[in-house]
Amino acid sequence: MAEPVSREVDVALALDMHLGESPVWSVARQTLYWVDITPGHVYAWRPGGDAAPVRHDLGSSVGCVALTEEGLWAATSPGPTRLRLPSGERRATAVAIPEWDRGRGHRFNDGRVDPAGRWLVGTLAAGAGHAALYRLENGELAPLIEGITISNGLAFSPDGRWLYHADSPRRRVRRHAYAPHTGELGEGETWVDLASLGLPGVPDGAAVDVEGHYWCALYGGGRVVRFSPQGEPVAEVVLPCPAPTMVAFGGAALTTLYITTATQDMDMPARRRSPLAGSLLALEVTTPGLAEPVLAALP
Image 1: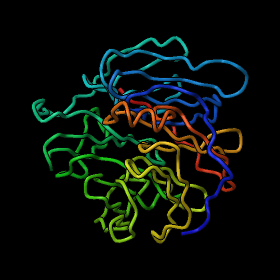
Image 2 (image 1 turned 45 degrees about the horizontal axis):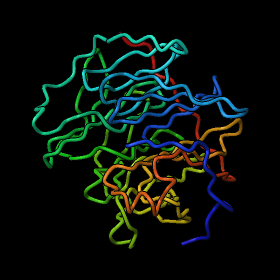
Image 3 (image 1 turned 180 degrees about the vertical axis):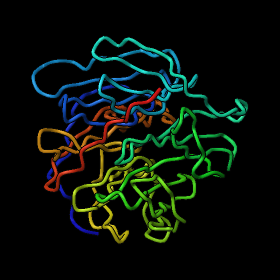
Image 4 (image 1 turned 45 degrees about the vertical axis):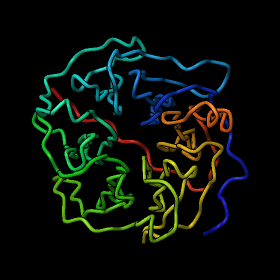
């Protein structure tokens, strides 16, 4: 394992999130967006100065967000919702969601916009094998990968020809050949196996830099690991909290790695040992990340 890639991890914002997730950086707005899944909060924050983040309360769980020209799409439990910014005006969409078994604890989870502007969004289910990864097309969510439990780790290689994806409990990241022009998904293969590498935790949210390295938050492992395009760990950053959830490249040069964190499953002694849990963290890196695509026009 290589040396850490930054001198220190900074606290970008001291927060008390239950399950912070889905950070996305808008290059056009120079703004970071992210969610706190359980209470249904969406945050917007423009770094610099003393401005506090703006919080929009959606009233239901929200798994992830995607950039649009007018604001965001949010994957809420009733279905995808348009969020106009900065007003926070909300409007339900015409997208039909699958007939989930609510008894299995289904909800939306990790998502990512592909290079052509399609939205890929996964789900989480309490029962093993009942969740899926979907692609939004023609006003419907079409399943791409089924038989999973917690869809996570979505990211694309710089040329868009590899899709990375994890089913977190299996502790492996798989990669699939991907046709960016058509959205066709090829057969998958195990690309990273945390158990065989001796790495702790499970793969959670991730992002890719311009060199094709995959940065993954290891939930329960208290670190972010940078994997080479060959799936080899080349650097790790140990964090001051046990449950990082996802990373996103932001800042003017896309060299600030923002890291969302969680406090769920932590009792009070654990909270006292890790007082920064639930905050937004940041560290400066030398290799910039990829700009986040904007969702194409949808119904």
